[in-house]
Image (cartoon, rainbow, N blue to C red; front, side, top):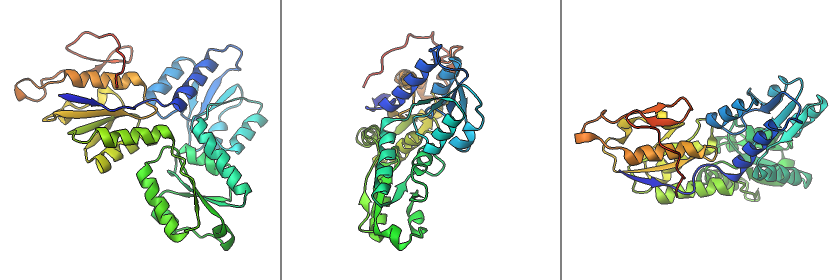
Length: 326
């Protein structure tokens, strides 16, 4: 089997920075305890489990403000997705030690919408409902911004004449650039004067473009990432809709079903921006060694979790960790 190792893939600098901030905080005895993360630092279960082992408590809930209500003392870390000014204010009022791990690209969007509203604009923000990143951005300028997920949301807008006069479009950083441009085009049909700011980050764009260019001709694309990761789910979508290649998403090697590989000669592999690199390397190694003896199914050893949480094949001894290539 030929394995196409799509590049770039996996961790982006915003995720790396956020994880480093948490690790540094956990190892600093001067930081007030307990140490809490307000929401998932990044959308990946394996990354969160690593931080839990360091004594960091990840709290979750419907929104950042309600999550904060669970904290009475200690340190709070704001995630890479960003939070609203109200959440930061409430944390300070509680006397909590606050550490901000917001991705720099998300901070740019916060600054942008605040600046545009100060200039009299009303914001149409394209993003995913229920995702923490839009929650933080909308909280920057409440009353001066609407969340748009699709064309139906554009049709449902009830803007005042004053709001329509000066419109600006901004976006979540982890969207599909093609879906986003489609929605922007629809907005421009109704509001041709709207000023456009596409804030999809370079890491998201480059990973999507890599799938389109490198997965073509493959029989299957395997995307390694967490189900809550928006950028991971967009990679699945991009493979299917733009590269024309069926795709599956798995969290790690244990979720890979060998029946998916039956009759496949070329398999592409990529990973979301919050996926630890070792998880993708394990999937690639497995695929490179995969074969079906005599064309029969079910005879290849299946992935199994080792006590350390890494994955090996039952018929082989554990191999030392390699370096991700390509």
